[in-house]
Amino acid sequence: MLLLKRIVLIVLGLCAMTYASSASDPTQEKMHAIAMRMMGHQLLLDIGDSTSLVLPVEKVGERYRITFETPFAFEPSVLVESFKTASSNARLNHDYLVEVERCDSAVVVYSYKQSEQEDTDIIPCGGRPQPEACYTVFVTLLGESNLGPLANSAIDYPSEKVDQDGDKILSTVTLYGGPVLLLLTLLFANRKIENEKDNAEKMKVGQYDFDPVKMRLVLNEKEIELSSKENELLRLFIQHKNKTVTREDLLHTVWGDEGDYVGRTLDVFVSKLRKKLEGDSNLKIVNVRGVGYRLVVS
Image 1 (tube, one colour):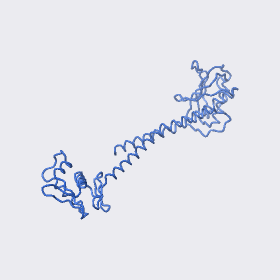
Image 2: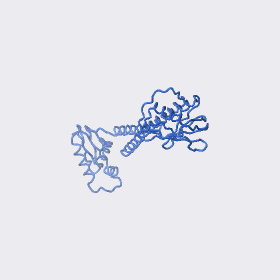
Image 3: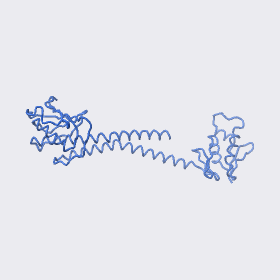
Image 4: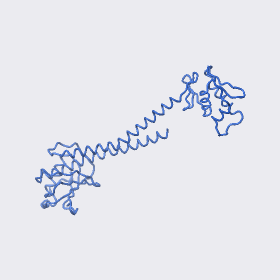
């Protein structure tokens, strides 16, 4: 039982550590993904598209992938300003690298780095519009995050995205919370069973409380430890109190086939048990000559 408890506690600790590590990074990543989604929406608005959707943002390695429902054309300067505006509204205090790829070839058609410390009006290839096509935008965050609360935005986010995020949170709680709850339930159920077993095993003999599981007698809050043989002898005497138990039955039940008793070994253990029961004068273990012993409870 002790080993089971230790295993349960170790597994609980591992689950708690796993949950703690997964409860911080995904939260930050979720906020980053929302910021990326805002950047994609802002780009569509700035190029005159207020109906197309930005598809759910995914993280691929260290890059966030922004995909769009429909093809579009863009000017690099518009994309840069759109992303700068949205990242500011999202309080994304991060340097970042933007790479725009064509969906059909995965060729990078435009890329740039946005730095808070190196703000500049120079936009690479700013005067070269990109034709209408299917584009995927990858954003890599650089340096440490300082993500603050999201500012209010006039962008309307589809309810499907909110539901999707809620499902992900629920899945995370279910994944890590379920096993922890189950293990806690098993732990307390096991403890309850052990307590019930201990209480069921306890016996009253005269003024003593006898606990065969913990192998001890208790009298006036004083604990008296018993050896394993003394414990088994006393249990047998109590089960047959005021009745004679033969030497053969005592030896067979307590020592079995161990063969580690010789001569007066039984008498020695009975003598030790008598001394431990001296606190109650109404208890006596008497020798029935030639037959065995009897626990007399008066």
